[in-house]
Length: 255
Image (cartoon, rainbow, N blue to C red; front, side, top):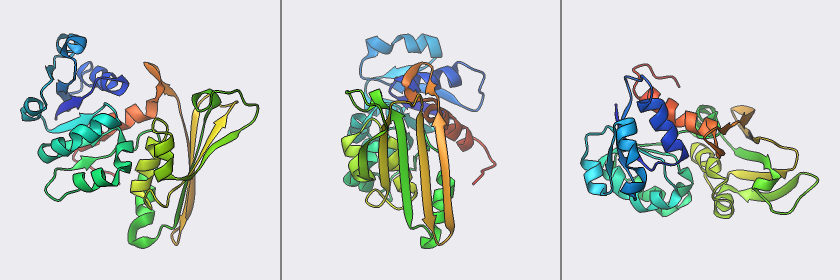
């Protein structure tokens, strides 16, 4: 599978290292779209990729899927054009809180948009529970180290947000991508409950998901170590992108 990569931040570099920098015969990043060629030209020799600064030329390259590893602003600017031409995998899922953008990229004439689960899991369970209207409530409770959310020191857990996913991503755009993937898998951004807690004792991000409906109920908790190359990025978020690409290249599908 030939992959085109948009962006070369922490997850982009992770993918280059673990796909092109290892002996993975099924996956190969062949092209990378960047804004600044001189800044990233070393990637061409280091990972045997071709760099592009022109979007049309990038989309014309021989790739099977485009992986976005940039940011919300880039997604809003480029995704409507990319999805017309290529299957796409989105990392900056928070961009889809924009209902107009979601409607645009969901158009029937577009290619397939793949959304990895990022720093959480259990999206198969949430989607199964949603089938035939069997899912009623979804709540995401996220605990993060206090300094990552608030400036002043605190001695006890402090709720910094409690409300719906739609408002959570507006107020905490760098912290609430996961609330959007959960909303899309479940009951939507207007109905998904979100609680964000600044915890002075926390060392890792912890996400607890509670769902209930006529199917029953479920609770699961995920604690993820940071990516060694970038402590602000969840290692599970990077792994979810790599693993989703692997599954796309396999003949046997689970779930």
